[in-house]
Length: 348
Image 1: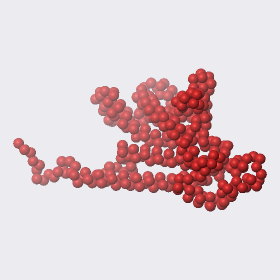
Image 2: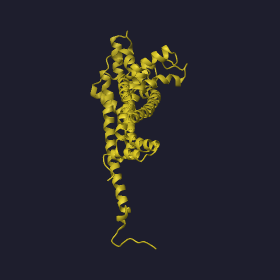
Image 3: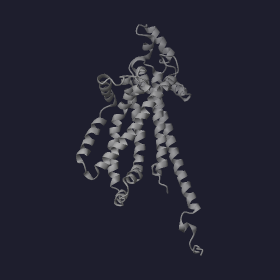
Image 4: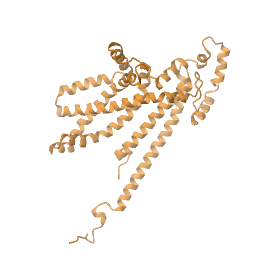
C-alpha cells in the first residue's frame, strides 16, 4: 500500500527542501567571502606595516655600517665615500621610497658584506629554521596534548590531587624558563657532562644529531604550556552534559575520549598551533645562536652584531613576518572548515 503526503503538507515540512539547502549554501558562501575579504585585507595591511617595520628597525641598531665596511682604520673620507655608495646620506623619506619600490619587486638590496642579494642569503638559511621549528611545533602539540589530556582524565573530579598540584607546579616552572636558558642547560647536561650530543651544529655528528638539542630547547617550554591549557580544557569538557551522558551509558573509553573528547579539543589545538609556531620562530632566532645552527637566527645575529648588514636584517625580519602571517591565515581557514562559527558568523 502506497503512502502519500497529505495535500496540506509541503516537502519543506518533512525536511530541508532544495531551495532551503541552496539558501544555506549561499549563506555560507557569503560568510566565507566576507571572512576571506576581512583576512586578506588584514594581510595586506600587515604586510605594509611589516615593510615599514623592516625599514625603520635598522635605525635602532647602534653603529655605522659604513664604518664596518670601510674598516676600523679607514679614513673619514673613505667612510663618507662608502656612505654615499650605500645611499645612507640620502634623507630618510628618500631612502624609504626607494626601499619600498625595491621590496615590491622582491629586492631587498645586496648584502653589504657578501655583495649578493640579501634575500638569497635569508632564503638559503630559512629551511634550517623551518625544519627545527616545524618539528618543535609537532612535538609541542602531540606531547602537550597527550600529557594534558592524560592528566585531565586522571585528575577528574579532584581525584589524585597531589598529581594535579605537582603537574601545575612543574609545568608552570618549566614554561617560565626562556628557551635560550633551556638550550644552555641542555648543552651542559647532554653535550658537556654526558657527552651524548654535539654542543653546536657540526657535520661531524650529522645533521640529525645536531638538530636534537635545538629542537628540544624549542619544545620543552611549549609542551609545558600546551599541557597546562589542554588539561584545563579537558577538565571543562568532561563536565559537559554529553560527556556525562556518554559515561552514564558506559560507552567504551576509546569512544568517550577519541570520539567525544578529542574532536572538541582540535579547535583549541589548531589555535595554539598558530600562536606557538609564531612564538617559536622568534625563539628560534636566539636558540640558533646558542647552538650555532645555520638558520635565519645565525644570519640575523651576525648581520646585527658584527656586520651591520642592513639589507640582510631587513630581508630576514620580512621573511619571518611573512611566514608568521601566512601560517596564521592558513590556520584560520582550517579552523573555519572545521568549525564555521570561527568565521565570525553561524551557519544560519
